[in-house]
Image (cartoon, rainbow, N blue to C red; front, side, top):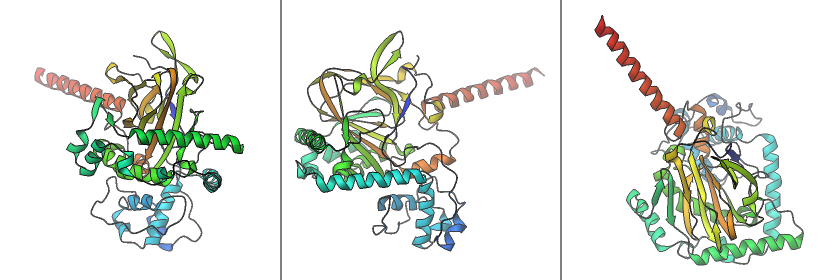
Length: 403
């Protein structure tokens, strides 16, 4: 079965940050002012698995591009010889690693974007102030809250359906929360238009919608990820950093007539249809929740999980699945799970997207030779090698017996 077309990397576009999660730049040169002890560890590799018995130091007083939680998560993966070093030494070591994902030009872009956000937050008056801090019982359905708070594999699995391997669907958001978030986004877009303010769109493929982090919702959404997505990802996606999520990119997108659904045409077998570009996300784990409104069509289709080397390989029949959106219901999948959106044939559909990322996993990929634990094509290649090995062994034994 052929693909609908080349799968694209769905990046943030104008946004800065760790847009390229594949490969690592050469180690940066020694920085001025760096602690003397840091140089001794510059060639040490991170641990593949975190040291769960190690208690990270407190980084809440650290200011810079990354949240303190990033350093706390990364510290558990430091080489054993570095764990007991001074905090400043560990901090510089981790900053060196993180800088490999963030070239100087990207940092400047991020700095400009930070100023852009600060200006918006200073001037924009929220419509629903209660959205800007976490209120679990008002945001989430009771069944979802109970499952996550119980925090066992059994409780989480009890609210899930898994229609195809690696794709989970579950009822999540309260209708009132969906309505308030939609109204907040509409209010923000009206304000932007009235102020003649430039709005940064969610990514390179969505031309309609808004980045929620840009107008003050970042702290609430970070808590959303850490307390309500990470426990699920830790259970279902440990092999792609589901247990070490430490940053996010959150946005709302709009689909409908004259909206993102008509971006481009793709081939499917012998027919052509319009889709929102067949792609993978710049995330380890993606949460996609329909907020409303009235619409028909707009199915989300999946076409197999792939690493960077196999992103455009063929789709197998068992990897094909179409998901129909229901307001308030979430779908959770790996960012590397290839997918796209079919046309919203009538009405307007708006979705909340939360791209969850793990800086630890992105560093670990540097040391991996293959991804057979999650890439469908790597798994097929591994099975084929095993089959060929068995055949070769049988042939060799047959030759020995004939002698």
